[in-house]
Length: 362
Ligand SMILES: Nc1ncnc2c1ncn2[C@@H]1O[C@H](COP(=O)(O)OP(=O)(O)O)[C@@H](O)[C@H]1O
Ligand SMILES: [Mg+2]
View 1: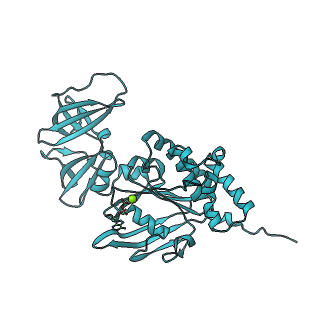
View 2 (view 1 turned 45 degrees about the vertical axis):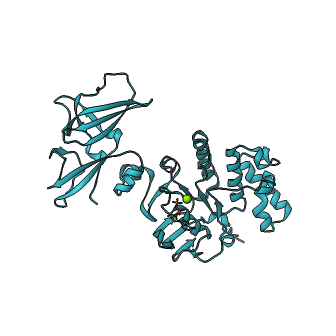
View 3 (view 1 turned 90 degrees about the horizontal axis):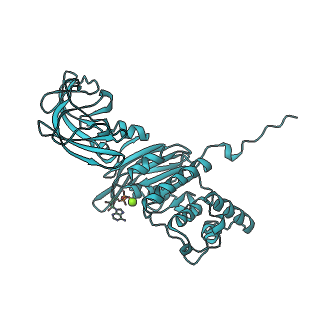
């Protein structure tokens, strides 16, 4: 007789989240305004935005600690909008994660399993496994105050992982740590993401963190999602002026589009992607590392001006430029060779490659 293997639950990819027009108001203030987002099983997505942009409120509505005024939250196509947090089975790491100070590391991590009345043998096996995953096996008997900040953070992650949720929600988990440790831990979280294959929704106001960690980034501003894209696209093809300015440094060059050609402040022709939609005002976005300052006849058509400042910042030199029309621009030049550079006061032309500019017409 031929036996067919039953598909095991681990074959089925779970952990897809869909948000449909979520809205949440506190008094007169709209904290989250018509947020829709679809997150694939296993995806690492960041909610990136300045303080007050609605990131935490969005995450808390996914977790069930806040109820939306309207809209829906789906987990693997099941509507969980009205379920209490403990019935959603999502792992949550809060902004100000609090470990129980009187409990050991192992007891802290076991806590969610004890709440679920998991039998002792099974509980211990799971706690040990998850502590190994976050490299804290040797610290099981310690108390939180005997750990470094980074180790405490890993305990919080272990506690969120221990009941094997399909989705992990992380709210600025590295916010309280210093820069070096943050960089180290963000790599660890990335590695953990690859190892456990869970969906992760990661809230941060740190654009570098979001770009470095995520499959996709959702940029939030004033309760709304302004753009959802892969990190490269967020940086290279910002959808609006807010995204262009919030993520990385950018030169904003006012331009007029006429017959498919961009003209600068002094009516000079500017390199810009082809445009054919009639005449209008626009802004050209050019990153400092894409803005070239050149001298002589050979310099590409661009904006005439002179150098107003040079700042050595280690790996690069930041060159300030002022156009004859009064526009202030910034160029970033990597200090790869010790060759001759421009000096303050030198006349030069600011230019860029067509493909390195983004046209925004909002
Ligand atoms: N419990 C609350 N009561 C009143 N206003 C709140 C509450 N939580 C958040 N807000 C407001 O909602 C907006 C979004 O807050 P939040 O989601 O915490 O933003 P973020 O996490 O991006 O900093 C802010 O203006 C904030 O002041
Ligand atoms: Mg927040």
